[in-house]
Length: 195
Image (cartoon, rainbow, N blue to C red):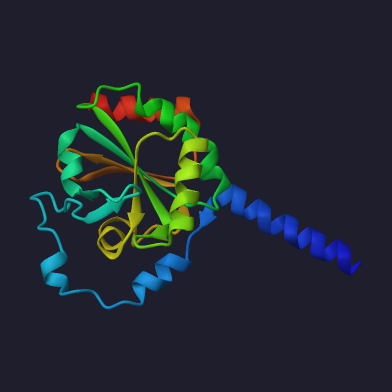
């Protein structure tokens, strides 16, 4: 009877994770435990409509510096927050890789955020991330987590994948929690580009 209870409890836990996305708390707790650096200097100014543009500085998986200026290079940026342990994240990445190549670079781009790997991680961890990106054909920029990126974009993210759609001014237009297939993403992207 005990074995059956343990088996049912395990299956229930896995089902909850698969249905609701993957929880991402370890890195969040580490960053949230650090004091904010002079908050008044790190908060972006608010626009007239009360929405503040996203402002951050980070590095991609190849060590290149990337800032929120990346948003100004294209009309719409899809920021897909994922984790190395998240099966729904990895399942949707091949479709995202295809979408990344199907739009003009001045219209649309995808940026991934690896939410469970921080800047300065050991080479074995970075190689693992690179292998996952190659295996899923997710050939677009992937950022590693740091405090600036976390505080700018991820403070309210409680599950992965979470996807933000951000305009050329760095303002979030829409947020999607959970994974979708390529055709559903395409419909969402086209709708936002038409606005």
